[in-house]
Length: 329
Ligand code: SF4
Ligand code: MG
Image (cartoon, rainbow, N blue to C red; front, side):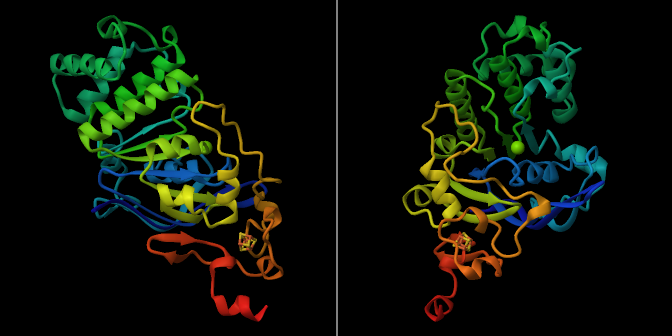
């Protein structure tokens, strides 16, 4: 396995009127070539901010990366010029968002948007880009691809628009696809089709996928490895089988306890009482302590480190740290 994306100790802060919000608090995640890594957690855990940090799309927000590095193919993309970044974005790293309407331009026809992306990234001439665009629409299973080229985004259903977005994202055979809740807004049948499609594309073009979701059913279907985030930090990381068979962090256990089957509407996870702490009531010790049914006194004082409990199984919880401390208590 060769690392494609290596995020090390990433820190992203939001500078608002009421003070600084620490959205991503020292996150380390590696995505290897051809691998699908799931990033899971509730809303507000820092998943989307992590992906926007990678794409360097925080400019229009009060957010700013204040620490760490993001190496893509051994190059720290936080240090390259915006021009160089534009070359990577869409070309080497593509992203699909939850709501495709916002990422497709409503005033241009589907074909024009696809062709332009292809011409920009693959440097094809107009004719070749046109052909490639149609092929991509067919590849994502859209019927009457040729006619679709002449239609506007509003003429398509949500599921079709999402497929167009995937076609656009995959048209340039990116090395990494970042998919942020790619199917959340879609109905069950379309959701299953899109996931299948992403899997196919992964197999044919060896694209690595970073799949951001709160839906553990999707994770079980799609991922090789899983990173669980809570309050801006990684709290557990392991392979997908171990995650479901032997979850260690109380938060992960709670998530799995509330796992909906693929297709069931997975709104937010409600079997864990309470909410993700807001930046203004962030506990001193373990960030999960207010909701944790295993919380001990020391959990309120000590912020646990991420440690390896077994081979490649990382957990941030005092239950799994220094046994001696536990014996003393
Ligand atoms: Fe729960 Fe304590 Fe572990 Fe935090 S450190 S998850 S409060 S047991
Ligand atoms: Mg999000």
